Length: 298
Ligand SMILES: Cc1cc2nc3c(=O)[nH]c(=O)nc-3n(C[C@H](O)[C@H](O)[C@H](O)COP(=O)(O)OP(=O)(O)OC[C@H]3O[C@@H](n4cnc5c(N)ncnc54)[C@H](O)[C@@H]3O)c2cc1C
Image (cartoon, rainbow, N blue to C red; front, side, top):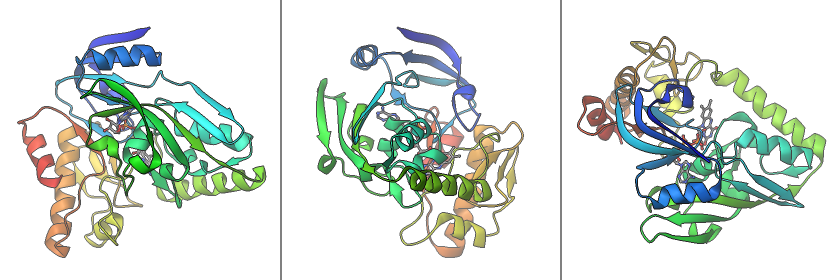
């Protein structure tokens, strides 16, 4: 069954806790229903757990499929097969319980399989591409489903083939290594502790790192040197402990976040002639002032 809502309030769906009303939202609960919705061509895009997105606070004239209910997975020996909506922390724990190593980094952030493969998510010297074997994708252009192997995925830093080719990930398979369970759990604990000390907690709205790291440098380091920690625009503010995070401190709007990002972008550009580009994805209407600022940073 698919749940469908019109004029849906997206604020509650994303980790930033920002967003206005969305024209239409669909939540399929099986892969067959998901495929039917994609095939209908009625929808503009697919989202996972919305932990890397900034929705506009205005009315959003788009129709979006959310994969949150596609939660099926199976783990047999060293093989993990998961539907696109399965969340990383759950898989991380399930694999640790079976002494499987490779997903320890997933314990720390709330991405879905689809979103993580789209972004080639990584942290703590592990990335989703390390264990990736293959995925079934729906090609919106040809209306065909086919399998992509790792070699076809064009994985790079925050990059995969899904970003340029109108391909929707249905499910994926991974191969993990057998490892001592205590060792796996120890690494997961260290990852959580690292985040507790340096990253904001999800109880305050945020979407993880705001800008991608430029080549051979760190966006956080550059923003720090520009004195951006604590900078504010309306209800949005740069995290005091790490300058590449923006917090929704006090009912921030998407305009607050984009104005603050633009300030950060300008400072780094003026001081170091380096252009930072957003890691997060903006979802709003074309032709608005905030969308124009976004295009300039993209
Ligand atoms: C507190 C916090 C910490 C974070 N730390 C990290 C980190 O350490 N490393 C890191 O890499 N990221 C991190 N992130 C960012 C985020 O969790 C990742 O980018 C994650 O991969 C996004 O997954 P998602 O399901 O939330 O994707 P969404 O935000 O829902 O979508 C992201 C993109 O993926 C596309 N997409 C989603 N599902 C599919 C699908 N089935 N098929 C095709 N395209 C799809 C969407 O269209 C969109 O363009 C963090 C975020 C937060 C809030």
